Image (cartoon, rainbow, N blue to C red; front, top):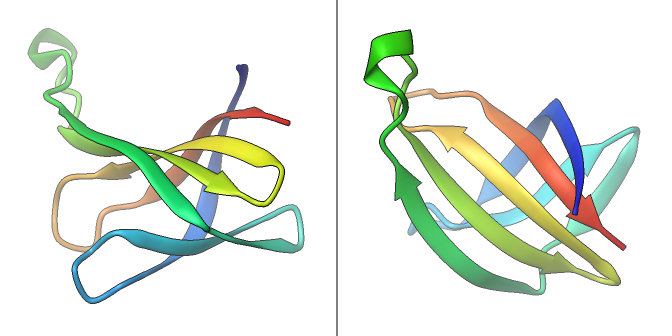
Amino acid sequence: MKQIQAWIEVQTHPDGLPSQFRYRERTYVIAQVIDAWKYGGRWWLRETPRRCYRVQAGPLLAELHAEDVPGGQWWLAAVQD
């Protein structure tokens, strides 16, 4: 997977799972959440815990991360097309 690490805008379902995201002026509709996990962060670097998702959006396989705090920022961690 190619590392991206870019802030993105994400729409979610009522259960909190991502439904679509916008990257480089393009909207990607998520067809399937393949995997979901929590990452606690490196406490010694004061990283915020995050929720991580591997998703399928058309031909694009993407890894999305969200800060695990109210109103937390989303970013596109990596892609494979």
